[in-house]
Length: 107
Image (cartoon, rainbow, N blue to C red; front, side, top):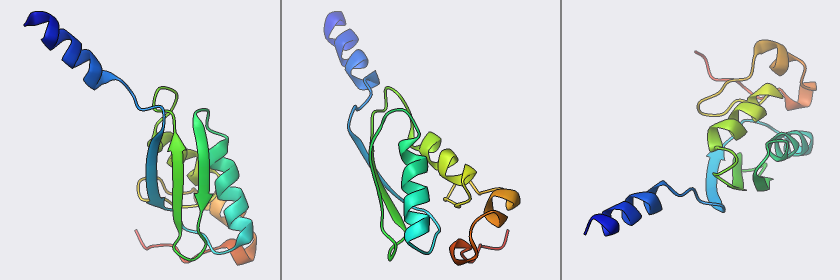
């Protein structure tokens, strides 16, 4: 019985090597798409990143043994695009091309 509990607990701690996530990222255009996807791919462990211009949704597949969805969101915010938990700095947002400056939510 003790061996079973130990194996069960160990299995629950195992990270998913192909974890799928979808979350919103603010942006407007094809330039935004390239920048957002490039930022996501810059995070070690990201296997796939596709941002949809119309829905503003980013679909990612990542290796949870190497990274987390929070790391991906933080990388995207650093290049000027807001996510639900990380907001781009004013400096990063202001450095975006004028067509990429989406309407930001009021704090």
